[in-house]
Image 1 (cartoon, rainbow, N blue to C red):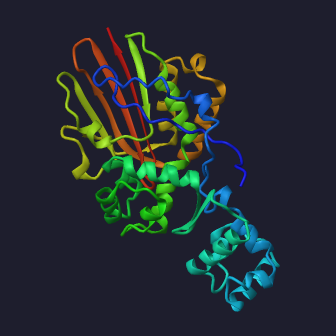
Image 2: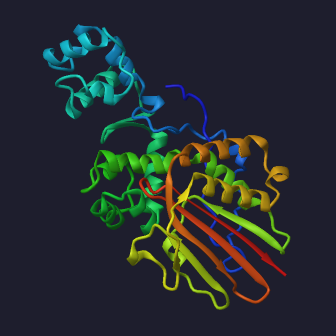
Image 3: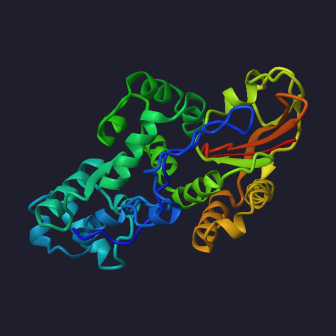
Length: 343
């Protein structure tokens, strides 16, 4: 099946934060942000059918009664045909609203769509209520195999046992293994898919920011995936100011003051913009990567609330680092910026 469209695919995130913990230098083989725009397609919105799997819906919408009857009980076929006569199906959730159509019937529809070449190997299939592509699967497996403990629990706020089981069982090789893990259901699997795929334009922007060389006097690091707990709880020899908000009492780093209000979209956007401007992003990063990255950020943070911490620390009397950590209180989407200067 021909691939449709393209997506920004971020390379592995840089680690470290300014002069206190220097970021690793990307290998020479790391693709540029512009090159990443040619990366394989990924699901980029919170839909339940990847583009490569849209043939499942096409099969349900266009196959004859006789053809559908090969794969489904006749009473189910009758319900599907009667319903599609009023409006075509636009999602798996829409299909599932038809009487007698549940997960088992959806898998039977998937089987028929695959047999009749409505979908092929580019569509992995329906897992926990969403149809994912082969590229989605690669991103999901990579995320679950590499994500830090604190971030995974934020991505799965209502599936604590599922997160623990994933951490104890990884590495995985397929998305099916992840979906089959005890404690992982429809909501948690979709959260994982979203975390793995929906922020790639933003990650490409962050990669471009991190790639801007420092002149030794100031710089910035921006991260999409990171261990916020280890960063927030680290101690520093000189100044070590911490202000946190929205954290559970047991998660507040030692010595941190508590801010009563959560962060909103405007605050998160402003801090990412500040890091971008701090390193001269407008003159050093292409407009395409900049615009796509900020548009992606704006879409992901609109109307959301964030917990996190603001840290200011000094490893010596001649430098200062400022860190902003933001984590969506519902879905665990997180960003971190760090700016630093040194005399």
